[in-house]
Image (cartoon, rainbow, N blue to C red; front, side, top):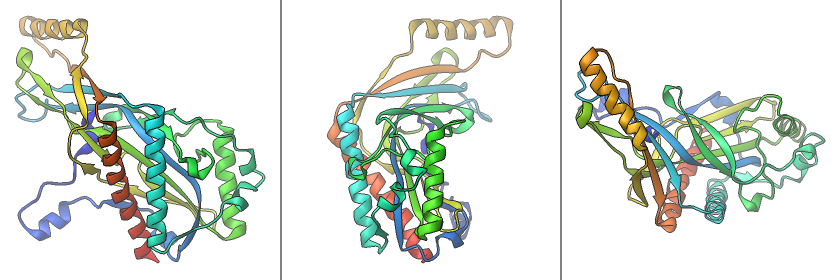
Length: 315
């Protein structure tokens, strides 16, 4: 689970090589669509707190350890904790927009659109499915800022035949084209764990996991509905991390799962063949909600600064 957080490439010795190897922090689709954008209406602002992640380590070329899977679950935070953090993230975002000269306009015109007016509020704490690497999926809880006054999901989880999402998207489209004001949608995904690591092999293999707060590259984005009715995005490519522990980690792998893995190893030794991937489960219980909140605000503030500076640079 922990996998989402590898930060860029390793330094390569020369500035020129490093520049070629380091990933670009933000991928910008259709940069021309962001040119001249100095005012927006906020269509969606969602903060998704990851609560389940999957990560792999070991089993690679010349690896001394077997392939291992680590699944982590975040616990210990209340709905009130998540909501308070979301409100703080949004307040910081608004301040940064103002500081960088991007006006956030009143959204009454967009809300009056016949399609947007049909949008039913999403439920705070709604479960989100998160696409991770290696075709694995994580879970998250979605919150919207109370200051915005609505919970709109136009660009979060794709849900087939979802009229609510269609109405939100169509309402943004109509408003942007008729009012000639672009609509900005922001989605931030909050990760809670660093990449897992393994050591040893067979019966002696162990998995090490560590808590680590980050703005995840798995979905964090600015998406702009332009005045031409076309959607373009800025996508985070590398995580924005903040160090320091905030959780107590306990392994929760069942005895049955451990026993099956041992049996597979012993069976492989006797009969040959592979003994499969070790799947270890961990509970990340937040013991310091204030630290978790502070770190979340730090990484999202840096993310907002990164995205908004991209907007500013293209004006």
